[in-house]
Amino acid sequence: MYAIFETGGKQYRAQVGDKFRVEKLNGETKTEVVFDKVLFVGGDGNAKTGTPYVDGARVTAEILKQARADKVLVFKYKSKKGYRKMRGHRQYYTEIIIRNINA
Image 1 (cartoon, helix red, strand yellow):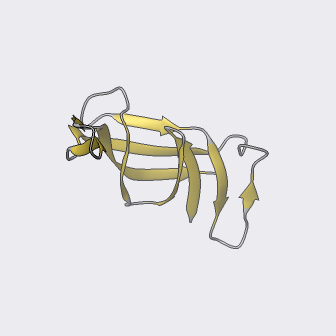
Image 2 (cartoon, one colour):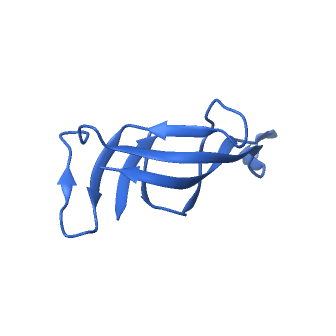
Image 3 (cartoon, helix red, strand yellow):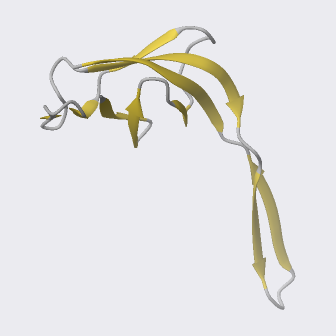
């Protein structure tokens, strides 16, 4: 059984035991988080499609860690003008593992 759920403006296809890096969620490590914006549930021959979300469907996950991604460098440059700017950014993320899918 698998489900497609939405969090942080992105959609993820999840099965029990899958690990994901999602946009930062509030919560401590080893705590449970529930995603109720489930778009699709299927896999056992009976599929449920939401309009836009499936009623009563939930994906339960556990927070493994809160961290920051590798640095992304942004370099702006204009030739022959002496214009150079360098900026860096590290995005916060939450690593989760899927524990249960309720349809």
